[in-house]
Length: 203
Length: 156
Image 1 (cartoon, each protein chain N blue to C red):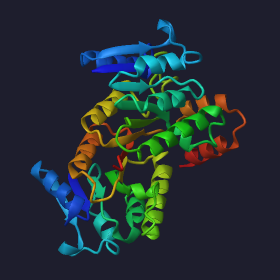
Image 2 (cartoon, each protein chain N blue to C red; image 1 turned 45 degrees about the vertical axis):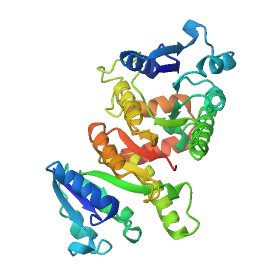
Image 3 (spheres, one colour; image 1 turned 120 degrees about the horizontal axis):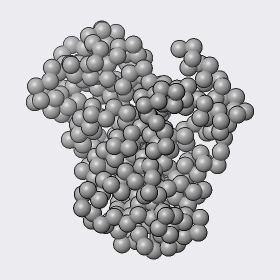
């Protein structure tokens, strides 16, 4: 089994890299660290991933995930697309990121109708994921048990590998004080976020 | 832990009832065949649910799944909702059903943003295409990974 992963040196990409390595797959990591820059190297990534069995479309950079999906869905048997739950809440996160994740999910939905000869695609709606640079034991930083852990995401992909009719997996999210502060920092003037926060606090 | 299956006498509900029974689960099924009106007996059925029980909202029951969800809100049970692919690819021959499933999915999305209990939404394909074992596998998987809230399946 040959697997290519974008963004394999950190976070969930690294977790996927370790997971497939343990399964004795031939794993090709594609990150800036080893000369693959999503800003400039989309064509080269597509070319080098074409003969893989599985492509993990993980790293985000503008609309590059969509370009990679479009370039590979006719070549690779199975593709995992790391999307974002933020696509359901465009009013809370006022950035292009949300629109790009929406477009990516819509493309996956359309491709799920495609006939044979097209990759089996798993779309993951990820929420707030544990981060390698956050101390999960510090209560001032980590205030929620609703952060998604790497092994929980990897187990979702493992489930899909054994149950190939699965097409979409969503993870839970919760508006905790920590998450609110993160969103507030990114969107200081977002009225909808404040309204939701006040509603949640009143519960 | 008791497993409650709303609509257990045929199809997917029957399969799940038997599969959980085989695992020596305490399983209770609710259907017309054993005297329950799924539309009128919502409170009576939900009253039997204890904290940490598993409730599978399987039957369409004239569009009452949302009412079950609302009634179970404070039950502290684990709830699985059977949705439909009709929510995103409407069935033009049954607009009412598609509209209801869309509403159910939107309602679920709203409450799952601030969940009061573990919930799983399964967006099923047409019953004639659905792999019952896959649905069972999904529920079993979710019981070990409750941070998942939604699983969708292939339409092909």
